[in-house]
Length: 378
Image (cartoon, rainbow, N blue to C red):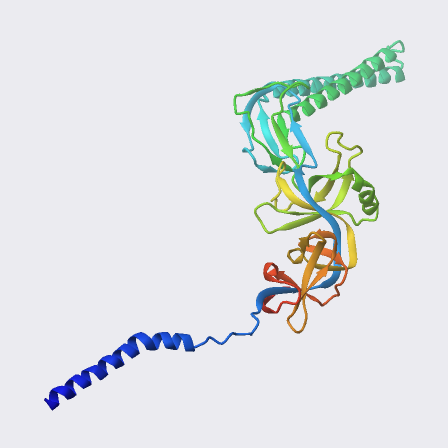
């Protein structure tokens, strides 16, 4: 009986312990274990960039169109049948390269006929000169004092005049013979050539061009600028400062050229004035008709205070930036943005060169917030 009583007591003790450990102890521990509040301020990650003083072009961005400086439609000066096409569609050509050849059999025959006429004229001259020499001899020997020397001289003069006339006719035919080889008037690139051997080409002002040759190097970029900017551009062009910079489509390649011409009238529909700049295009990467992003640069403005465009934020009071001091605290500073160019904004108000402005992470910031620098940006 004693053993049984001890066993029952032992089971009761174990059961009570189990109940306390599995049911009551977790709740008591949860109630007693208070989480100590963390009073450490969380730093907001940001990226920074320095405020700089630098020379920045006074410019604006727009869209430009590539245009050839020279574009010549090539027409035939004589009519004829095409015997050979010496150029392929879109080929690059040099000045005086042969593009198309015409049938020259008729003109060659006419040249031979003119050459024969010259030989005849020379023979007549030789004969007239011999006659004069004979008459002069007879007159000198008084054998035939009545010999007609003046008539012989007239015959010689007529023969010489005929020779000059036939020489001019031959030269005219030889010039026309050159027209049967149609040549490139300038260096550049041809378009599609619509004629083929056997095609009939008709000369005349109303005739369709055989091909058009566009000059490629140098080349124009044409842009329209607001008429209110024309006076400044004219002044800067006179000083040699005005220029246009463009990015080659599909490449990270910039080309720049001086402003060459400003149109003499504004477009009444758009209020824009066309400006042309001459751009080097060797190798040829700019094509007539292309649209390109351009920067019209009036002049360089020295010693301006700039920040990256991404640092500028806007609220109801205007533009502002966040600066970060040596204690890594953010400060909101209002700024006035004068203009933007090349990813930078010219600013004034409360900033100095060397200050650090926030370029990423502004949405989480407030005045006096603690920050951590993720990455410095130049």
